[in-house]
Amino acid sequence: MQSVWRYPIEQPNFIQRRARLIQLKQRREGRERDVPRRKPSKAVFGKCPACGGVTPKSALVRSLYVCPACGYHHPIGAYLRLSLLLDSHSFRELDEKLTAANPLDFPGYEEKLRAARRSTGLAEALVTARGMIDGRSVVAAVLDSQFLMGSMGAAVGEKLTRAVEYAGRTRRPLIICSASGGARMQEGIVSLMQMAKTSAALARFSQAGGLYISILTHPTTGGVTASFASLGDYNLAEPGALIGFAGPRVIQQTIGQTLPEGFQRSEYLQEHGFLDQIVPRAQLRAALVRLLRLHGKEARAHGG
View 1 (cartoon, rainbow, N blue to C red):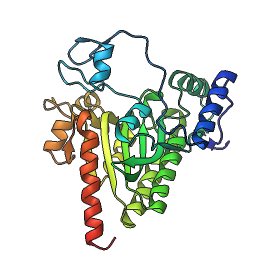
View 2: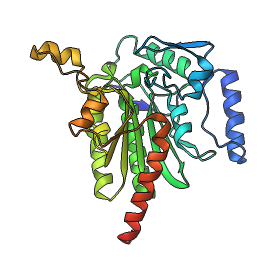
View 3: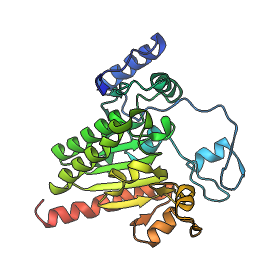
């Protein structure tokens, strides 16, 4: 069996490499500190999958990709998410070139990875970074559902574990934003092992007194829900997010019963004690600021 993950990834083409070198030079000189942005879509209108409404792309951008008609929260990319949460010019990406090999020699997997990297500009489904929120240093990790449905393989598990351990070493609060279909089937048992690996890292982080805020977005399912996404000191979610292990259709077919309305949506889960708070996207940064300030006051009160 070959190595489960490798570092660095394959070389990009000349234009990408030149752009990357310029960006790195700007960072070293202190002239570039914002979250990198993905090439904008050419679409003029966006259609809401919930209500079917059509919204001009410019209006959708202004609303942070929340449908103005029904409030549906469209999935957004990892870099956009980080740019909405972190203070301007504070973003520093961690382990950005860490990527998976093909540990089980799964047919077609390497081609899928290359296609996902071309279409998203990401090395993997998880982006980890250090930055600041309201002047408070944090470590943030964000899954991007546009990269193989945000699935968790060996590289995602390794990057997340490194981020947790870095937060522990530097005594920074940890914020993880999940959007995932679960374990990555092309990596089989290697993918499932990441559930225990990430959960164990978070247990050590918690035992050392670290603050972990988990944000669950649409959709968060499978092994991600069954591991790190559910282990926050505070578990927040966006409105209407699908959150669960198996999907509602699978559960309904298995138990042979009709499920309650809104089953596995964030509102239902908050009502049944799985979530602490549902926070609309436009209010999420403010909610994090409040929690970080509260935690800072508690730490000072206990001599931390």
